[in-house]
Figure 1 (cartoon, rainbow, N blue to C red):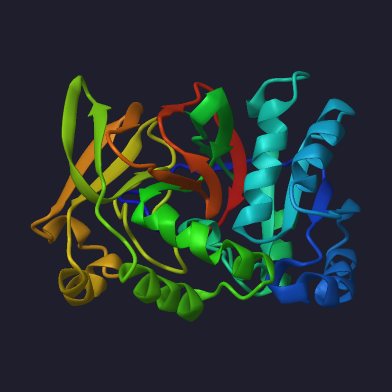
Figure 2: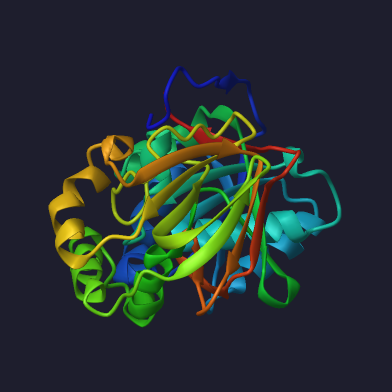
Amino acid sequence: MGSPGDPIFYYFYLPMHWTLIINPTSGGGKALKWWPRIQSALDQEGLSYDPYFTEKRGHAIQLARELAEQGHRQFAVVGGDGTLNEVVNGLCQQQTVRLSEFSLGCIPIGTASDWVKYHGIPADYRQAVQLLKDPQVLHHDVGKVVFQHQQSRYFINIAGLAFDAFVVQRTDKSRVKGRLGHLFYLWSVLKSLRKYSNPPFAFSVNGQTYREDIFCLNVGICAYSGGGMRLVPEANAQDGLFDITVIEKMGFGEVLMSLHYLYNGKIYEHPKARHFRAASIQVFSLKEEIPLEVDGEFLGFVPAKFSVLAEQLKVVGNV
């Protein structure tokens, strides 16, 4: 587990019927290629399931919403962080039952699978299938962001503003093609540094407003992003609060010298990093557009208001 302390898991027997939402393009097409093997593993474990394949970007939102309204309650994603985010958004958008009625699992196939790292879900699809057979269920926070033109989006991992979102925005087309892995993302970070200016913006948290030039700001529920980076290393998915990391203005050389802080879980030892914990935060631009991403998906620009939902989603993880 990536969170501090001991997470509380609930062991109980769920009806063994899963609604699988499969993104065939995940992992550069690996999900479609591996589906017969995954199906065989599901059958060997005696699991009951209905498979649904996504057809385009955003389709998993529609599928999850419609299936939830038809009575489906246990969902499992065959894909990566982007497909997980879409399924969560579909479950949050439906108006039939409370969010806490749903369970969510994952068989990770995507090129970006940071959420599963936090929950100890193995990359081996056979072991991930076994977790669906004997589920250990964690009550998990869900975040909501309302951004430009009053659009809204839900997330269960990490939102990034400024540099993080700038990188995602620049690499988005490559990510869709399945090329965004750890090394490619790091290379994109290094390339983006040359073109990035630390914009001035304001954020309000815990009753205080700050105005300054910022390198990046992250709002986290879980700990990992960007192929294993730990920008919010103390995040706890059960505490009803965001962990927020703010990194002040940094130059190209400073960032290069600080890259190890992104991975070693010691980001708060960096002299330009600050840590907040809060149930909400608002961010405003002062001069130029500030980009926004959630769970690795580029959304648009601030202003943005983040809040934690009162209800929690049940997710299947591993101790």
